Image (cartoon, rainbow, N blue to C red; front, top):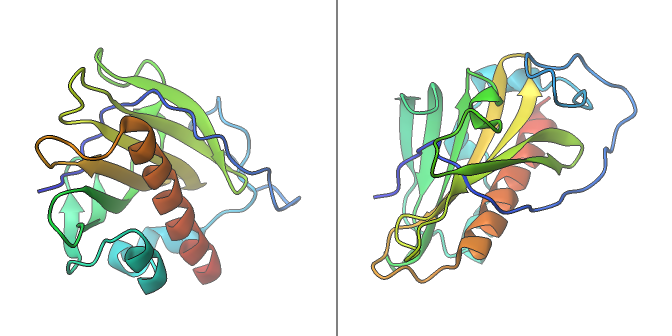
Length: 188
């Protein structure tokens, strides 16, 4: 089973440039640029409702989503989306009440890495863990979306042996975060 683990990963996904000129206050993560706007709906968001059916089908995430009201790892609600054939990558969407600072360089484990990332003008960190044999690889994107709240997109491949490269997991984590961000932005 795929579990949200705020480990860390060293892959840079790049990102798009800010889409809004009105900046909201930054979070307590002072090293990040200001977010383009405050997504106040983050506090009440239901992670299982943040990915569209088209996104899930496109990525083969066809098993019923698994909601968790209080994911202790991220300090907030999360939703796990698993690959239809059981073997292959899965994705997690969550809303952390700890902000993105837990994913910042220096705050992740010694066997992990972290780098700044920008997705649609929202800033955060891409973090995760890359194992020598690719087992247990994970990639997480955490975006600063509101004061004290981070949108988390994670991808991992729990099949043995893994069928998804670390770079592909980072791409899926970023796409997951971006798709969830689009839904969250539409809610305000």
